Image 1 (tube, helix red, strand yellow):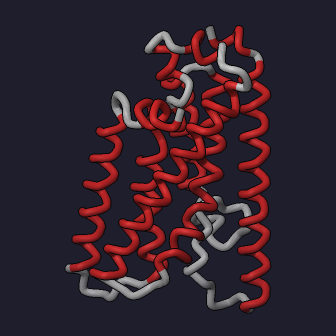
Image 2 (image 1 turned 180 degrees about the vertical axis):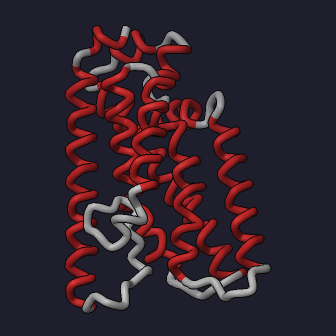
Image 3 (image 1 turned 30 degrees about the vertical axis):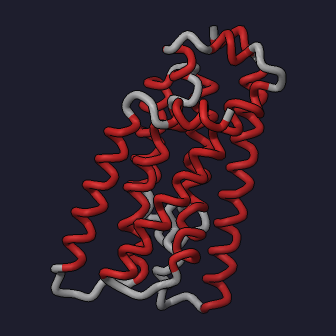
Length: 223
């Protein structure tokens, strides 16, 4: 089961998203290496968000579409508890692969640019990445089409990216950077804002995944 899901995750156009993510990552790394100013932890956080989104985007959005395109959907629906054994498992395999790749990327940046705890950086990055992945998975079950879900997620992502600056230090900011500590806010208040933001992202992720599982129960709508 795991071997089959790995083949689906790495199938079709995933390699293009992976190449784009690595190219962007290398470009940003080169810019930081030759910049006049010394990069700090918040720069590392911002540099890793976009390539990580590119890596997780395709396997999550086209989680179901790939089975439909390969005419495997009816066979998958015949597996007892297929929602958990196939699609939920595939989702968590994608997240696990993202964690591994992100750890390697972070480790290289730490080696080449600035010393920072690798696992703590990855841990903080996974909050917005898990939330956006869960919402993307939900969108795929609502729209029932990978391309349509991709358009919706691009619009949602652009909206929150644009709003990231006005909501820079707000708990409602999905891309809240925990390393960009404001100077005009006390440490206690900042930690409360960060905690509330992380709780909302986790709760939102759980709700999105459960909602997606309910949608997958209506199998006839996907055929």
